[in-house]
Image 1 (cartoon, rainbow, N blue to C red):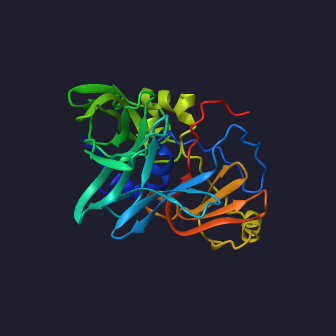
Image 2 (cartoon, rainbow, N blue to C red; image 1 turned 60 degrees about the horizontal axis):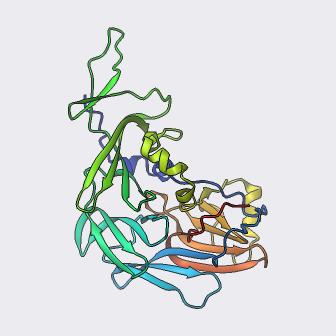
Image 3 (cartoon, rainbow, N blue to C red; image 1 turned 180 degrees about the horizontal axis):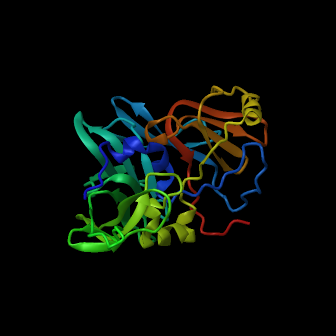
Length: 318
């Protein structure tokens, strides 16, 4: 029995896919709560974000307070649902988009970006791309974690229950997780020439609380590595309660409406707020509030996928 849905997962379950990867660390707190000082952050606080540029999509690094921003590269595609993963030393990044390449329709575009020389190379897409999450391991090897509902259920037991998902001649024990729909999760490693499937497990997907690709041992290992955990996005969807909205509306030059769905992340004295209304929940527009000065630090009306630039330091937070 093929359980593939009639609509793509990315359309039916876009809000869930924002967190399904299991590699995103949701550690920010409410915008007005004072966080413990990040004394281990020796570098200046910077944002990274995408903006439309001359028919393509420019990727920037923007130190807060600086007059100029650094152009990392310009991609030959629209800024549709960008996803980013950084290498441990911040020498490279993987960037994925949905959309077109030079006017040709493509389901997924993945680029390997050299952050030192500002060069980029397009990588082939893995065979399955739903629920995509990208990562590097500590050796700098790219990984892609994806979901797949192209499987068969094995013959049911006398009680009418199928115990395994069958895929390419292999049987995978069905996930016992109570939330979500049956799916497979694949871990693909890029060896410099092609994506190699290194791991497949049965999982549950497409609902809040479902494990998704986090059921993969490789994904768990990379998510637990201290050298890599600090590179993950730090974002949290803000509650829509009336009291919280009143506090937000009182911020200087606050650009969002009371009905906008917002996400928040924090670094040092800065709080980043974005509108979570882009495709797949990717943040649109970016407002940065300086809690130390009590003022607006930055507003970027065209920014897509804004986040704080990760910290390269290997020291532990205090």
